[in-house]
Image (tube, rainbow, N blue to C red; front, side, top):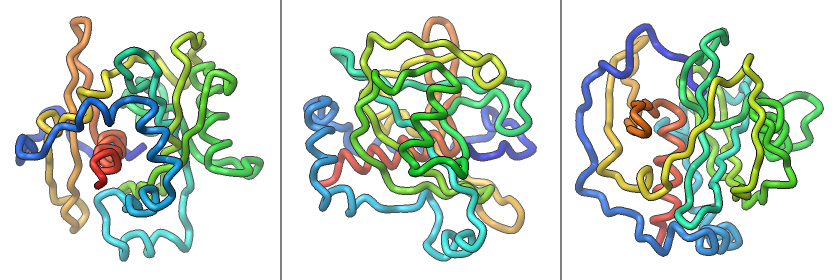
Length: 231
């Protein structure tokens, strides 16, 4: 969701990899465990953070926020996966980036969840009947002023997707155990417009392709890691 700065993030050096953090245990990657977590409001509330930004940063954007939501779609396979998209290179913003299906809220959207489901259907043809919404994660503030709500959902693996080529060039799935392993989380830092911006990247190699997950998408995945590791 975050707008690409004038540099190639793939070439920007990493300042560290979080090898020291524990891997999410396998039993916590089970769909039934994740479903139970979202049924416990105490756990959900404890995970409320706003990206990598301070509360002051959030307050500064609340007067005129750009609200958006994305579908954090976990595909219910024997080994669960995370459904991601590659945005069309012809888009004016965030072109070519790896993202969750989602976008800005319309005035007609009654909720963040409705917007995420609508956008997923419009972008990749994901029918709401194939989606079980579990709940909303903590809002994520991007460097460009978007306040994004990740809507966590379980998706039936029998889904049939039809991509809108104006929005998305492909979808792919990443094993949940891969992105929930902090040894795959690289940290980056850069001075930009008078502030130090920090972000994560999670390079992923699949079927001969290198896919670079970074920015707000990686940040929301990282927040989900902390959510699953909540004690």
